[in-house]
Image 1 (cartoon, rainbow, N blue to C red):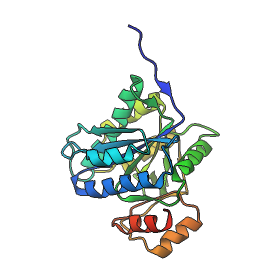
Image 2: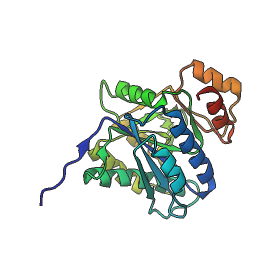
Image 3: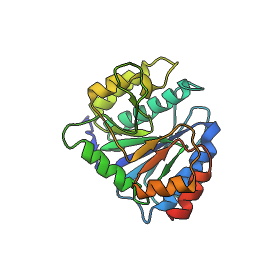
Image 4: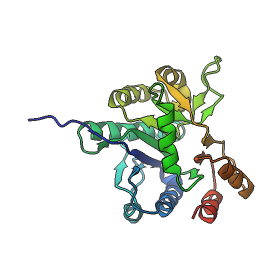
Length: 251
């Protein structure tokens, strides 16, 4: 039997991860991202990743499928709470990608954008923005992770960490390394914070256009300022105001 080889793709896989507590917000965000696309996307495909005790909403999948090629997956990890549930969801996401791409059941995307319900796009062409930034940070040397760098981290060396709502490489050897690393993480800290030194050593990059704030309400003034700065994505928006502002100013 001939072994199937991974199918290279220049697309990005958009992977939204959720549990029952933020399922409604995640579905609303996914629906909006579909509304934002003027046509069926040739830049990205879409993956819904539900925690093991949550579910896939077929109506939302059908709507998003009008604008993206869509996959869905119920994660098998049994972690709950913070950070164990979050760590298991991310592990499930990259594990699904690794096994499916390795078996040529899905394209071998150049990168995966792993994100959650508390994020919003800051410009209409945000996917093109992700592509451009990923290509930029990989121009000199390959990186395994890129996104919003924050100064707090697990050591006193100024390493900081890149928030887990980020782009990760589609290179399958690196994804396998990442799976083993995240799979062995302890349950008292988020994978992105705890494993920051290893990701830095493997190669990472800040993307200034991706912003991460801690549970911060976003005002219209903040949103318009972000648009003026040409931000791409903002993580940490903990209420529905963000989507309302997106619909007002991006559609």
